[in-house]
Length: 213
Image (tube, rainbow, N blue to C red; front, side, top):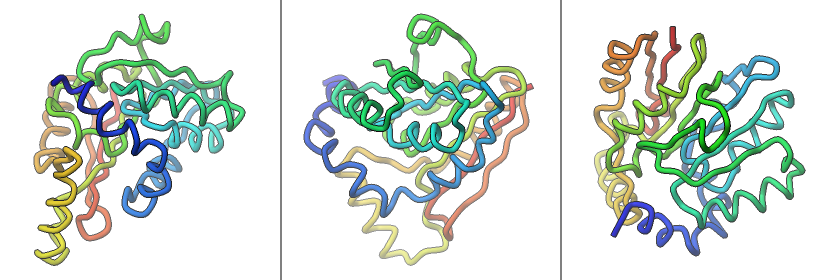
């Protein structure tokens, strides 16, 4: 089974309640959006855009931004299109199906670079997640930013909590990436840029990214 087929299977029914349930534990998404500081007229790409919830929030926070989203799951994109239309942003948001590890931004969106690229709780669901990280960095315009938030290692939380959370996440093919901070450092060395990363909520989540030069 391909990763695309797996994600469509996972979200075929979950997509209808995804935003209602995930808001309680996908922590740090709104902080990332508030920090994007999108330049006027700037283009924002979300990789793994899911239901479109984050892009809609970006559109509200940055009304002059041009918005783009890519996701491997056509089931999720179906929901995203409906949500974007309901939010009145159909003319501002462009959505496309593609693999985070290797999509052609120019073919999908008519542009190769974006002032802001972000990934919210998606790297932990992508088997070849470091390839997706490199792909995301390639889409960042010079002087632009890549921003990431995802599950951390729960290092300052009780051991039983960590075991329970990781066990539960595993049922949905979610694997928090222990090497995320190191991968961001290596990415900055390989592609040029200034990396950053920090833990949030006692290690529950990780915020990271880089500024391209």
